[in-house]
Length: 182
Ligand SMILES: CC(C)(COP(=O)(O)OP(=O)(O)OC[C@H]1O[C@@H](n2cnc3c(N)ncnc32)[C@H](O)[C@@H]1OP(=O)(O)O)[C@@H](O)C(=O)NCCC(=O)NCCS
Image (cartoon, rainbow, N blue to C red; front, side, top):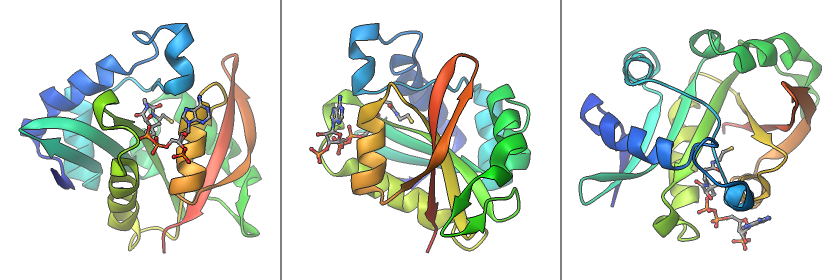
């Protein structure tokens, strides 16, 4: 098992994992075990690698078994949800500090292949991704859908994240989560 920054040759395998865990393909009764909602293309992932070095992968036997994305708000701005998060970002604080597009970045989604869950891989991929942005930003934020309690539990108990607040968008209820990067 190797945990490292992704290269373009990892992306087909990464997208297979994303598709398998996307809300569109996860039955409702399994959503409590996790799902992702962000849609991203291979071209957008290549931009994320080139502009932000923002793609962490865990690779086992040549297959991507986990990934985590991370990038500055400027990168995420074209997605409607992230554009909304930028609008409301300054209503959230971490340790009394107001979150801004300059002092924090957006991480996520993170995804772990079913066969590799609850193995400690979450912590390793999360920590690698967080450390990789620490010199650029003092804080990281992310959103978690309130019908994804497994992700919330992992990010709080294993990632050390805290809830900065809640928000609603497009008929979904989200937690806004935050953490210091170092
Ligand atoms: C969310 C995800 C990254 C977490 O990684 P993981 O390896 O499953 O995490 P872990 O099993 O180490 O930790 C999850 C914790 O949630 C708990 N948990 C599991 N199912 C749960 C549920 N339905 N409700 C509440 N807690 C739950 C587990 O018991 C575990 O806590 P514990 O180890 O203290 O007992 C992974 O499940 C995943 O990729 N899911 C699909 C995609 C996804 O949801 N991504 C996140 C989008 S925000």
